[in-house]
Image (tube, rainbow, N blue to C red; front, side, top):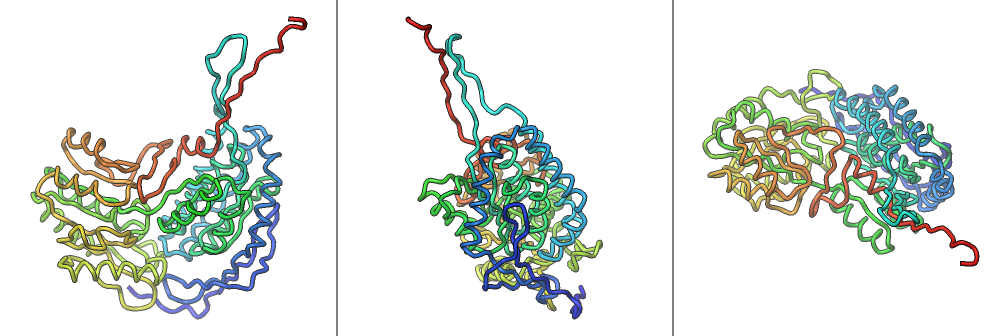
Length: 489
């Protein structure tokens, strides 16, 4: 891998927000610097929104909410379809911005933008369905349960897969009649701003407002009394703070937070295929996905064969410039995330784990870390208990399926889990006993459109994507209507 300095690289200044239907210059004096994960050089100066600017964005959304709520669902859906078309038309530009900001492979970044467009289209289609139900009361009266919007929704999204996260939450909120104030992650500020503005430009003024900034900006948004619902995808620590602040004032919260997803390989599974599944789960986006595989449990009868294949596969993976089409793994998002990965791996090695591949950061500029395989990991190691968010397959050998399933079901997170098994009874048992939002059998990623899941424990709370997310973006109202009795009765 050879990464060279780029003396001609442009430093972009992002000091604007989108409020009331137009881009407005930022007025804050505080600045944040972001560096290229590839070269380590400064690429962005971000001026976070002040509390006053956040308040004005919420005021714009609050002013727009009555008219937007009364806008027919079909009209709201038409606006979202226009937003989807705008995003799809600029997928290449969006992908390039994401690649530059976070180091995600360019091909995956472009595809992520296209997925965002698809999610906006899906929300448009789902949002024209039933908005309540009729109850079976007496024929002389009308009893219905209506679904109504919360009002102003604060949407806070992450850096690692920002396009689908933002499009999914924003689309669901808007199509159900809410207005939105969105804060993209400061780690992916430029691509997040680009996407949100594309969507906002297709909507009436104030329906979607965007504030750029960091945690302080998000705290001002969450604390605003006019924000009725906060929807967040991001770290568990941030999610807990949001739940505490919003909950204290009675606002509702939807959270999809961190994970420590297990993958269990059963006896009888082809070792080559199992190794490919582990690598896909652990190394895609350099291990920086909410549902990345972070714990691997191998049945002792197949462990040696699977690890041999996995180590060979690691040796063939190319780490390098994410804009290069021949690259398999790009860098981590920044030095801060690199330090977390280093700490977890070093702690595991000190505690007795064996490094079979990788295990140390790559020399040179940028936040590069190679695909890493650790054997002999135990349940008390940080790499098995805390979210690593890096290209590390931490392996524990288990004597049988039952022991592996028990370990896979352990821990404080409950986002997703994968089981590779040729045995139907084992698959059914895993689906029943794994207390996580999503159970995947014989495929580390995948699932039909429209699926929904509730993350468990430290992984969050509230409906995930799909039609159930639209329900979570609404509140129920029972309505009972009787005709006036005849005059004189």
